[in-house]
Image 1 (tube, rainbow, N blue to C red):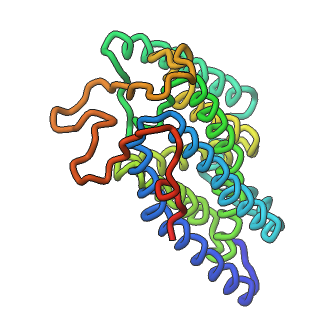
Image 2: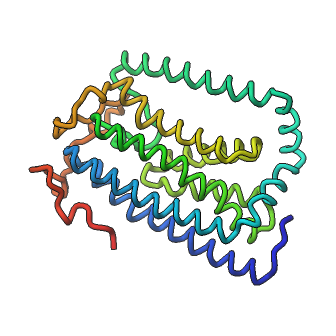
Length: 299
């Protein structure tokens, strides 16, 4: 148990509740609305504008928020990690992974990921598209400039999101709960809920991924390793697969309206990506110049 003074716990509880509520409300409202708009964009200029906006907002929301919280709760970060590593099951796994076994397993896991990615790329080329988990098809870059934004978003996610959800937020939550596993578990759950725009499957998948990153952090004790793995995980989705399967790196930025990328297999009741909705709110993309109403921040 990590004990804190009653007043400190009360303040931490207030900050945690306010922060999590703000994140969840934003994910359910603003992020969903922005993503629905993004899915309708056919113009690469508008897609890149939204990607740039997401990058800046992520740096401010996750990066700066995580840094500010981390400064306030820095005295709890190392004790939280130590208390978690001293739990009997965790300690037993860490002892078993010692002596080079952990490094060998990590190397084997990375090699397996490379092989599976290569096999998946070959299969996707044959089937005419990739299978995605969650509603993320619209996020896949469609030309060379968008690949650059995909890489920037991936690297930022590895840095900013791990800073917040593996270091800062668990340290804040453990002041409230006094127990390490609940602190890490709640932080991973919030991480998953922030991906509400991907639908229920996306929330579940990202929560599990968050728990996996948490396990790597606790077992290794290295946040830099987890940041690198997170960045590589996103680079695989937003850079490697679009380039290897769809060869989007061969599509120049002069192509103003790159075609949506096909998925395989697609449900027969699922409209094709990029199809215009029937409610009259579709972005017709008459020009590449963004309209002020399209990208205005949600109030």
